[in-house]
Length: 321
Length: 221
Image (cartoon, rainbow over all chains, first blue to last red; front, side, top):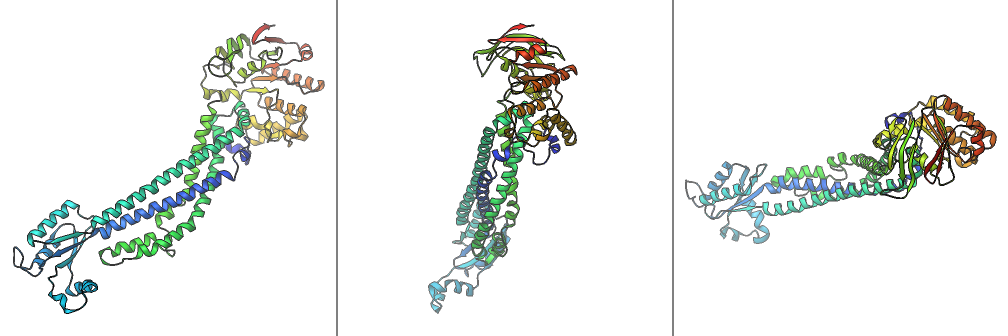
């Protein structure tokens, strides 16, 4: 009979649910759950952005050192460094390979060796900065590239920043998984809270339910009345929790902004800039993904309220003939 | 049409003590029966079976053409809407006004508010409670509550009307009016069963009697 409910005068509360499912306790608890869910969502979105940044940025950089760069190469006419550069530029998966100039090397080494002429006496390797294409080549492909470089110029070293990036990525991914798990737990607790409140409402209004049931109300009608009330209260809690989380999330985004915007140099620069936009300072606000997900909180709370109340009430009603 | 065939009943799951034993009788469509017997004889249990508040543990029970023991649960609500019941303890919803209590069966049946307003207003006038339409049950006397319960039971023109001590809180004049209402509905085709201790009323309105004792049907005269 639920589909005929528009005929019921507005506010008609035959089961007395306005008192049985009170308008303070349930929304407050759901608001707390929505607050936690907003934090977990922010953690998930933030960790995902960091992972993306590291994969596309620092993870895509490579340093190659060529000892005795000016010596003739094993084959061909050029120097060892030229041979390595040529191999790198021809290799698939390499977006850019650039030998650092003497001035750049001086700048790099000045903190350790000073600016004196003594440095020239040292046998310094040639240093080549490599930016890998996206997606970066897998480790076996890089190992094969390294073998070819060492063949052309024995003693060539390839320093991959990918090792510590992989470790950081593993850390970030586990953070992301934790945020996802927290989200699931929050959903489960919210459903449990609504189920307990609904059961308390059923117990409090048992007599009214039995009377209405005896007058010919269907399970769908009674469950619909409870679900409508639970949906309203849970949605209100979702709105309150989401609004309460907003200033916290903006403050977190503000804290994350300098961290995300820093290190704007080298091949990772563009990725870092895009991350700066993603993690956002207070000026640019929250990541767009969060702006899309936050309004989903009241909707999700309402859906959990509706489904939990429907299932709880229908199961309870089965004890009546 | 109500038909009992060797119906037994006990409360709860398993095999509790029987409150009704091998009850067999039938009331044709449009029939009127007094249901008599001392307290604890099983009158209320029999009425619970007829209001579909319980199902028979044994035997075959047919109410308004439906086999209650075999009917699927989802078939029962529609059947309940064709049965009116006046409970001994009224069973009014205490947070609703007299008007809303009486209107409840019509609203559950999905009637329009305009029709509900007219029908309930007329019914409340008939039971003498037009001025108390907005009062809640707690503000009404026992007799007034009983009249609200009666109005709720008959408002949807049920095919089967059941009453458990419906005159217990009414004075003689009101009891007479009530019986005349039941008789009138009966004449229009409603099957009526009234459980009562009031032998004076039975004597004044002679009809066939079902007499229960200790859960057995001892006489159908």
